[in-house]
Amino acid sequence: MDNKRIIWGSAAALVALAAVAAYQFLGQPGGASSDSALSADLRVAPGTLSPQQMQRLGIRTVSAEAAADIPLGIVPAAISLPPEAQVAVTAPFDGAIIRLHVIQGQQVAAGQALATVKSREPLQYGADLARAEARLGLAQASAARTRQLVQEGIVAAARADEMNAQIRVARTDVAENARILRQAGASASGEVTLRAPISGRVAAMTAQVGGPVMATSAPFVIENSAAFTLDLQLPERLAGKVRPGMRIAVPATGATAEITGTILSVGGSLDPATRSIIAKARIDGNPPLVAGKSVMAVIHSDTAQTGISVPSSAITQIDGKPHVLLRSGNSFIARSVTVAGQAGDRTILSAGLKPGDKVAISGLSELKMLLAGD
Image (cartoon, rainbow, N blue to C red; front, side, top):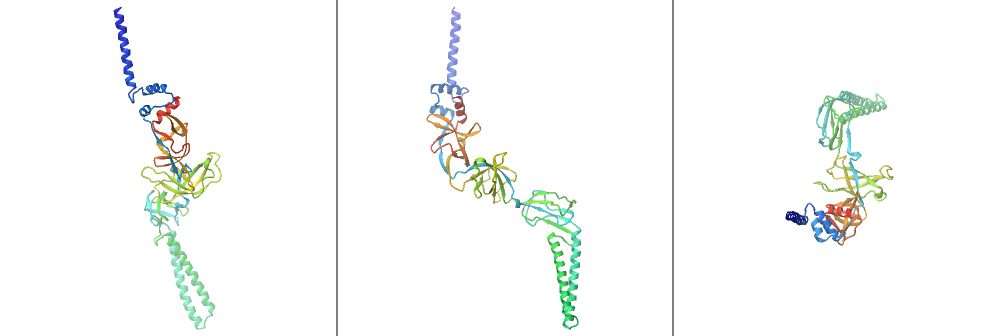
């Protein structure tokens, strides 16, 4: 009998010790069962959080602020080059490439040599130029003699007019052949130098040393990266609101400052597949962009609009849509908001909050778990 009492007494003591240890452990911040302790507290005051509980969960709040000049929205965009930014370099004559002076991707200046081509046609034009110059000299000498005979009355004046006409024809032949050789950059040996027509980057290059080149081909393509265009995809809600002349901006990333531009054109109909409208914007100033890259562009209205500014850390996604956790007394509610843009580390809202509303900026995961459990 005494043994049984000893056993039951020991068991009761162990249970009591375990209960005390569990209570102390659950009361420690960050303990493995802090959620259980919080649930016990919530059972005391359903739907509310005491200051101690908010401190334990690391919940901090800030007040929403009024913001001026809010953007119309943020839309996806693709970086591209304007049509005039790409220039193909063609060979004036058929021939073979004997020297290359650049590599693909290299930056070049306008007039810089790209390649040297050997061709027979410059030799032919050179020969034609020489013959035209000889005919011009002969025509000028004949005209001088004819004028002397006209003065002496030996031949009619009409003969002098014929000789002057021959001089004009010979001069035209000389000028035309000289112009062709000069524009082609051809030398007397039949070598033609292909040069960059604009400053930029060698974007495409099919030329190879020893390879053929034809007058109908373009062995080089030069891209001028001093200007870019943006292909904007406007959602249906912005149809009729975006107009040419409005300012756009690509938010700063890393060491790159904010890049701005202007909308050039806006499509007139919705794409039935994407339910969006295509707009074009231009960016100047030699920005550090890469054609083909996808970015997010902020569209600013040409008339001032007001909105609400909150720290970006206050925005959370619920069911795939932006929300904030709005404090109401000692409790929180999930409030759907409309994001209009971003300015540094703050998010601009066009709907969902008013100035002075308090929103959580930390402990959002814990709050969302509590709201889901209500």
